[in-house]
Amino acid sequence: MNISPVMPTYARVDVAFERGEGAWLIATDGRRFLDFGAGIAVNALGHAHPHLVAALQQQAAKLWHTSNLYRVEGQEKLAARLVEHSFADTMFFCNSGAEAMECAIKTARRFHQAQGQKDKYRVITARGAFHGRTLATIAAGGQAKHLDGFAPVVDGFDQVAFGNLNEMRAAITPQTAAIVVEPIQGEGGIIPASADYLKGLRATADEFGLLLIFDEVQCGLGRAGKLFAYEWSGVTPDVMALAKGLGGGFPVGACLATERAAKSMTAGLHGSTFGGNPLAMAAANAVLDVMLETGFLTHVQATADHLWKLLGALVQKHPKVFAEVRGKGLMIGLKCIPPNGDVVNKAFANGLLTVVGGDNVVRLLPPLIIGAAEAEAAVAILDRAAAELAA
Ligand SMILES: *Cc1c(COP(=O)(O)O)cnc(C)c1O
Image (tube, rainbow, N blue to C red; front, top):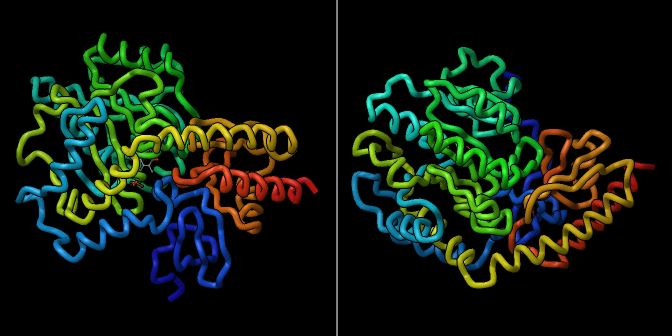
């Protein structure tokens, strides 16, 4: 037997971590790393945040799971808070981003089919998108490297260029049910949609009677400096997927919707055994306790401003290594000249964790609790890594 007991679907770096403290991870061999990947935008409040630890410990001693056959008070609390702070009227809790997107797609199909429009099921997505790894969400993402070997592709998805409103409008047919975009593409290489584009999508969706779905699994929950990235544009969707940062490291996803979009998602139509269990809800409510504190998002924006200035200078200093810095808030892409994997490896060797993204980008997705000191430490490491690469 040559296969590892863990199915080899990841090319893993040979390091394992034992514990974390804020923005730092300590490996089993004692090495310390500044974590600017945050478990791919998940550890929004860093590692071992005292409020999250206490919330989860208290809940763990009381009740873990009851199923969704009964009321779950943590869900009612979390949903009420997210309703208060978003466009949404209602939401479904699940365990991951892909599941949140599955619920969003099902909500869109159901919306039209409940009105007798059985043929209205297709969803238009954007090239470079990432919506998860289930059969439907790899079809939605449309990336060849994710679809390879998993034919037949789930039917019902059409793709157009990201940011091109004319192409989007031209792709609409009588079968189109919804439009899906990430307000800031994440895996695709940290590419923000312009406010004009999002406004155009909203108007187009309204004109053709389509649902507008935002995938904020990566860019939501403070990552872009607002609670939700869509707030920068003033455009609200009909349906929105959340996950990554929502549980601060505990698996939680949510599909948020307006009453109009979700009104035909009635009892028995969708479900999840684990979704929204008391442990997950304790974690997510604790995350919101911190994120909704006055000053939290202002701090994220101030830290981001400082980091962006430093990164701007870094890019200027190393034109053979970095081409551009882009993104929003603490969702940052460094477009590289050498292969982005080389930059990630050099940063790793110097004690900084980052993540590769599409379009030869290195993603910086630090915990939102970092301050000026961590921003400066990260840029100092990137500076060293770039100098080593250029040499
Ligand atoms: C990560 C991600 C997903 C998938 O989330 P999983 O929890 O891995 O299923 C979906 N959409 C976006 C934008 C993501 O970044």
